[in-house]
Length: 88
Image (tube, rainbow, N blue to C red; front, side, top):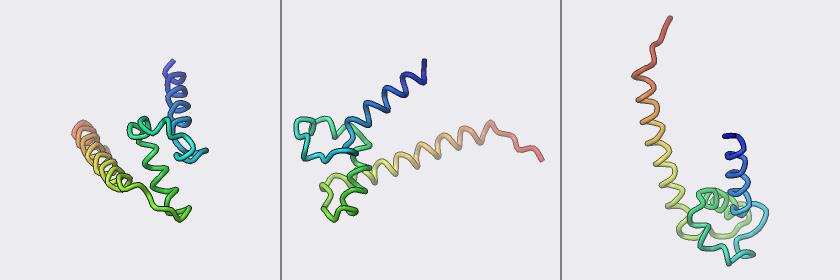
């Protein structure tokens, strides 16, 4: 059942992430994009590739996401490393 939930969430995220369409084509969903972290990742790549400028908020959000990812990785690793025993 978990795989069905994950599939539904990924499908929902795909449709609300501007991968197959430009954000300017769907202005009625502009209030939803701020909550979708994939939007910032796609826009962070799309802007330089297409030669357009990114919205001013994209770079700080991507930096925050990177910092949050590092903090989570450190916490998970430190918790895992305490319980792990290395056997030679």
